[in-house]
Amino acid sequence: MTVRNEQMQGIPGTTAGIFPAACPSRTVLDHVTSKWGVLVLLALSREPHRWGELRRGIEGISEKMLAQTLRTLESDGFVLREVQAVIPPRVDYSLTPRGRELTAHLLPLMIWIDNNADEILAPRVG
Image (cartoon, rainbow, N blue to C red):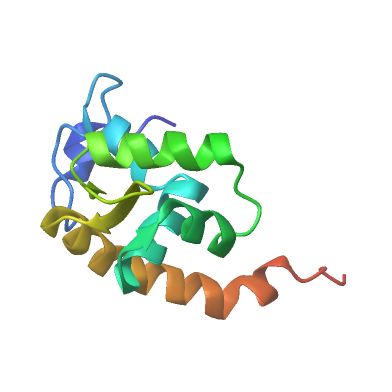
């Protein structure tokens, strides 16, 4: 069954144009709801981090995926990359105001997921 745009009217937080394939919201949704995108955003929601701190703190992320995720989130305007003029070079990553606004919405979802993941993934007896 295909959800039509008319069915979206009246659903809080949606617009009639989110279901067409060409809707730009799909690209943004892909960037911010990827596993690594969410984890990077949540890590930065606490405080700014250097690249190595993020790499060590987000278990399982490869160097390539961290670099790619940070580039994407930076180009989308969620993450700020600041190069410090020191030797050795230092780069800090933090959230922009848009990134902070986004994580304010992601945190309740992640808290719900964390509180329910064990039950959801528990083997079903039946």
